[in-house]
Amino acid sequence: MAGRGKIPRPTVKRLSLYLRELENQSTAGQTTINSRQLGDALDLTDAQVRKDLAYFGQFGHPGIGYQVLDLIAELRRILGTDHPWHAVVVGAGNIGRAVTRYGRLGGKGFEIAGIFDSDPEIIGEAVDRHRVRPMEDLAGVVGEQDVKIGLLAVPAEDAQLVAEALVAAGVRGILNFAPRRLVLKPGVPIVSVDLTVSLEQLAFAISLTEDGAIDG
Image (tube, rainbow, N blue to C red):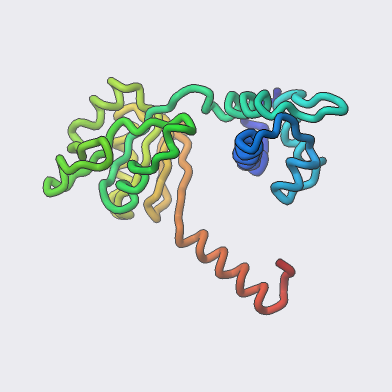
């Protein structure tokens, strides 16, 4: 298997797409699938599917393709979701509450260990099966529950300081919902989710389609 640092980011993103499709196929009762079928389901070529998977080894069988359950297990291992990950949510606003209540996280290997906020008026409120906890409790929960992931759902002006607090508490990576670029020490991965950027890209694509500049 190639070193993780040498694997193209688009390939890593497609692994999650492959996993979702394989899970759907498994639910539908499919036991085997070939690269063309997997590619067609995701609007990719069979060559692209084979190239992506080849970074991690040989998983197919000549004349058969891939065993769906076996490939699901391999992709979960590669992505690191074959074991549970504990995460904390900081920010008990609308986004933070929605993430905490999102029921599919547990089935994908992610467990919310707690939700935190600095607003005394909402500390103690129930969010799903959690109570909003003060920031003073953050380091203790991260240490006690071996939390590796922080989900940052605070206003932009607070994001940098809260991200630094998460790292200081022992969090190893951050999913950032705040519309601000974070600058942290090397070795702390940050994935940013900005709905407005995605909507802008969609609006641009629709505009091009309406103008006849692109097809579909």
